[in-house]
Length: 473
Image (cartoon, rainbow, N blue to C red):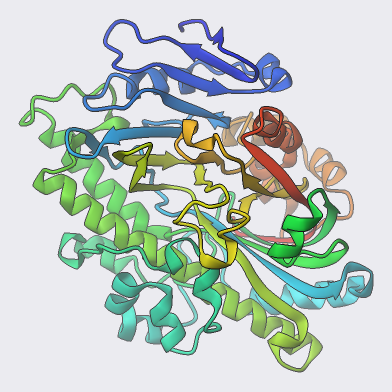
């Protein structure tokens, strides 16, 4: 593997060489750099840098680890007209993302029996685990096409959520350009999964605001130290997975016809302006809207769970939506006067104060950026600072793995997991089922967040501590 050369504080570079059309920049602070042992994600960034139409540089985030094609924690920008689009560079879980709800409940007022009742009430409403179908299948079937086209605003019309919720969602919960004709029957058949969290690293977490770093921004975001929060992390489920599977195969088959060199199956690409490229983007947008609606419907179920446990109406407990950010997307953006298609895989869009794409309520501060940790470690609310356009208005999306799922199951014991979790409640299943999601399998979230904070590209607003976590096998 080419050597990462120092390129300023917390930044390392592989200059363009051989078939590369762009440099590779990887952002790691000193602690993360010293612990970084993986060759494959760096090679994946180098492979991305060989694609036609790629814009300089290709970026690796502090949470970088091996993915399919582009690494997780990878950002690749393409010339909007001459560049390529890659389904694998977006990922299988299109718009895997996270949203945060804040409450007016002090953590000191939520006692253990009530917390357990709340977890049980949420689990009764929101299925978890791979392949699980929604408890709202009949409503989904009747409204599925409108959900894919309109996104969250259609759910609001159905009475699922509050009128103001879209004001706190990236794209208002509705990305334009969904093309239903570009979606396969297989994908449609996997669509009855709205209001399910799935498995892997997806979760619903009850936590508390442990520390405020930026009181002014925290106030603008509605965050109060010591209060209870809810994090919801899930994506487009089997629907988005099937779309990625379909188009990765098609792009691989079409590469020869377009005289394209494909460095790996995961980076199979076609021209953005080709029929296949436009079809993929239309199908991808539908999956983006599906995922926004998935988190929205879960939000509605969570609010109802609070009411079932504590009585009254959901507004009595706050439960206001702070923000909802997408991770795995490809979207057209203009940066420094240049229009580009930015692929973010395991990366989060992060707009600084004054950027016109911010929601109006966050125009003066920049929108909240949510960085979830593992089920036994902290999560962060941060905001972007000016200068972040150098990394395509992007930051990391989480902690990032240091152990593969297979390695984690071999190296971590149930006792190790329980010790790291401490008092954090994991919803009543066998601990052995979650060894691959143990905190030890992930990087130090504090160091990951500090990487951009230390060089002024982001600012910490608040630190969240988990109290109880719902996960699916």
